[in-house]
Amino acid sequence: MKVSRAELIAVLAQFNPWWRGEGIGDLPRWRRAAFRELSRWLLAPPAPRAVLLSGARQIGKTTLLLQAVELLLQAGVPAANIVYATFDHPLLKLAGMEAVLEAWREREPRTDGPEYLLLDEAQFIRDWGTWIKHQVDFRKDRRIVFTGSAMPLTEAGQESGVGRWHTIRLTTLSFYEYLQIKRLTLPELPPLRSLRELFDWPPAQFYRATEAASAYAGHFHEFLLRGGFPQSAQVDSITQAQRLLREDIIDKVLKRDMTALFGVRRVLDLEHTFLYLCLHDGGLLDMGDLCSNLEVKRPTAQSFIELLEATHLIYRLPPFGYGKDVLRGRFKIYLADAAIAPAVMLKGKNLLDDAAALGVATETAVFKHLFARYYAKNVRFSYWRGRRDHEVDLVAEADGELIPFEVKYRAQHTGARELKGLIELCGQKQITRGYVVTKALDDFGLLSGPPAAPDGQAADTRIMRIPAALLCYWMGASELVAED
Image (cartoon, rainbow, N blue to C red):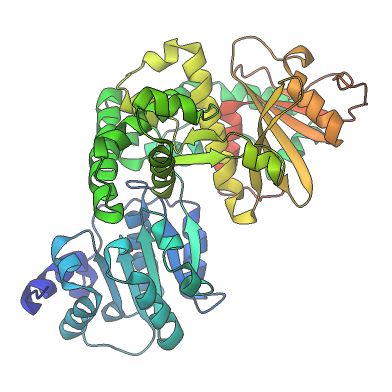
């Protein structure tokens, strides 16, 4: 559609205040862990590729782009060679990519050096995959970063996208990042480069960490209620934070994005499917039960679940194993953030009074933190179920090593009696270390004397108990080195 050049220039000038020599207003000083990787690809790219920032709505992709602009300006890049455009804006969406670039160059003539294009919500660009491919192949003078709230960015035109862009996948805020954005002053926790280091800690170190962690427990529960979305994290009222989160998910993602990007017509059925998953967060997906309860056909329900995963609202965790074991097994469903279910259901603080629901929210948070920390390392996550229906919540496969995690978020301290699944798996697979995520801050340290596995095979395994608040803090801390 034809949009006047003057209107386009006016919109771009509003989004690019550095062209007028002005700063970027209301930009937070704290930076997400992903900023370091993004900076490297902008200033000294390891390969001639574009960069895709992929993640759900309202998790800070735009802020990362604007912080990248600030970095470029500080590095001496001419302001005229940097353009930011969001294709969520109706005029830019209607005008199209080439018209936007022409308006940019009419407003700001090019100077020496590379051009930097920072494109927000690029899934709304017509034939975006072909355009990015052409730019990477033929415009070596341009460095492009684009964002997307839906997985079609990584799936559509996948063949042409191979080798053309590097994906940085953003999850919601970690507990560590949540504390940073809240600007809370808390006792300093001992640094930890890897969870493996805990096995070498002396008893005094566990005591010191437990003492410092007491100030973190209440904030961790509030984090589970507010979630890892920057906007909801900073709202004073938890009820208002949950309402904002619910509106973003139900109104913007389910009702708007699903219609615009995927052509979904049965929006009410899609919403009901999502509500069903909220009620079964952290559980095994029973497609028969879902279809029966919602009165939808199996192919329709399967399509909805794939769309919810595409828009970063859920994760699907396969059963441990390969081939037929996975194909025949049921997937485990985790919501993208622990706060989504209580927000969608408008539960307020009632979550804290429901021990079972609080345990589920904690398990969801633990998975999100582990996934976010090790996603770039191509770690495979699954859940395990043994012959006696004993289970292990999470199993990470990294560099040929299996590392199991069991979440036991309850008041009682954890002993070997409560860990039959973990012990069975470790004995069966000869696993050398495992982790139990606990609730009480003093339920922390090496589990003493785990017994042999139920089949009689010795389990030469060391099991570390670690409180959820500490695990999530350390997993999110930017100084962590992914050695596990």
